[in-house]
Every structure is written in structure tokens, then in C-alpha cells.
Length: 140
Image (cartoon, rainbow, N blue to C red; front, side):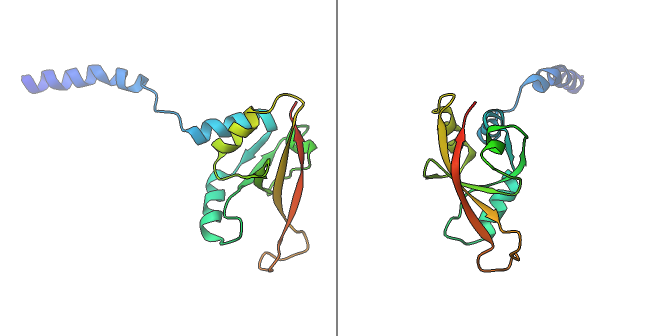
């Protein structure tokens, strides 16, 4: 009888447990904020795998999976597949770092960026398959 009462007590608590939201992931929150301000989505998992496999002078950066048309990123010339390496001369090691740097800018201010873009005519196994692109993004 006591076992049945305990089981019913746990069943009654299940709806309460279902309403508790898990803690928000700071990287996901930063990715959402960056998407709103710059109009770009990053392939976070792919970027982390790339950094763990490829040993380069720049073992950081995030690959862009989507750049929305008419966004500040598209206006600056960012393309899908580019890897954002630096923002205002600081390496991008986490999306939270980029989000913090972007939130410090006011509308109409520009942020300097450095990204790597795969060369079109160069095979991936080449010694220099990437070209570096630098410029500025103006926030709207």
C-alpha cells in the first residue's frame, strides 16, 4: 500500500518536473544574438571539430553556415563557408566573446573583421587553400 502511495506521489510531481526549463547554454544564446545583429549563423560543432583536427597558426574561428541576404554580414561580403577568425583584432575562440564585442558597438559603428575563405581554384590539400579577407561590418 505504501509503495502505491509513493508511486502516485511521484506521478503527481511529474508535471512539475516537466515545467522546469533546463539552464540556457551561453553559446546558443550568443549565437542567437549574433544572428539577430549580423544576420549570420555559425556551424558551431563543425567549427570545433575543424579546430581540433587542423593544426594551423590560427586554431580558432567559426565557420559560417548561413549568411542572410541584405544583412550587415552580407553587405560586408561574408559568404557561407567563410571562417570568422578575428573581430576588432581579437581572436574568436567562443561565440560569447564575439557577442560581447558586438554588444559594445552602437548602431552605425563598424567592427573590423578578419576571415578565411577557401580559394576557388585551389584544392583543399594544397599548402595554401585559404585566403584571408579583412574589412568592416557596420551595424544597422
